[in-house]
Image 1 (cartoon, rainbow, N blue to C red):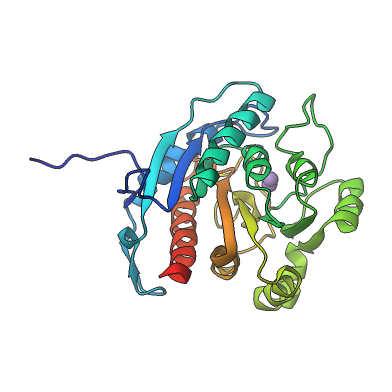
Image 2 (image 1 turned 135 degrees about the horizontal axis):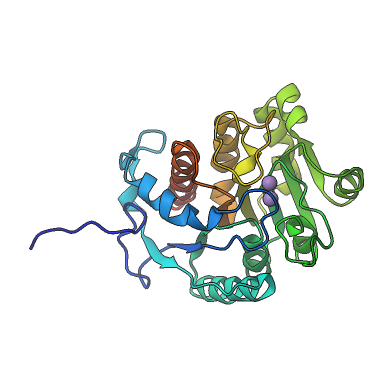
Amino acid sequence: MQSFSSTLFADADSEYTSARYVIFGVPFDGTTSFKAGCRDAPAAIRQASYNLESYLPHYDMEHYEAPIHDMGDMYVECLPDEMVSQVEDTVSLIKEDGKIPVMLGGEHSVTIGAVKAVKPSWYIVCDAHLDSQDEYRGSRFNHDCVTARNLETVKNVVILGARSGTKEEFSYARETCHLYTADDIRERGIAAVLDEVKGLVGDADIYLSIDADAIDCCFTPGLGTPEPFGMTPLDVRDVIRRFAPQAVGFDYVEVLPNDQGQTAMVAAHMIREFIAANFSKEK
Ligand code: MN
Ligand code: MN
């Protein structure tokens, strides 16, 4: 029998029943405010994943040692509140089956349903934006309302890398969240900031969400709402390495694959890092 290529994430060779990690894409970009097109990200990230060596020297593991299943992409409804319900239903099933959801956006509003399903003790997000509008352009499920919605599910929120938002959003975020701006991280260094966050979080379960625009757009320009003066790819990888071991859910969102492929490539690496860091704890 000849072998055939597939469009699934590289090394996601497990059946659903035997998998520990369940990858799925949510190709939704219905509320994007600047440049649309992040519905194409799941396919671009999966394609990028085939460039990665299976061996991860940092973890001394082959990626295929981790039992990963890729469900493919969800057929999403066009209304954001319906999409949020679809994601909540899917993640609830994955959680009930004792597996860890690894979601590929799509825009950031996909995270709202996942957090509602997982109900983590802590929500940690890397994002250039505060996403703290109560409503934006007619929807409470706009990608600019994600943190505001998640605060209805999770009491404890950490925002890393923020540098864009209204004055009201910044004061709201400082009142309701643990906020570390991109400037804070640059001044203090990512290790010191993560030590402090670890002190807050302890060993509690967390949901980890990476909005691709947390990373400076001069590194990864494939973004719907690009922002300079941000975190580096290494900063974000440090966040994943530190917190993946205690995470019960993960997503990587807001990649707009209109660049030379850097942004999707970084995303593919980060997803693999998440799984490797979480799985290494279990090995
Ligand atoms: Mn966001
Ligand atoms: Mn953002």
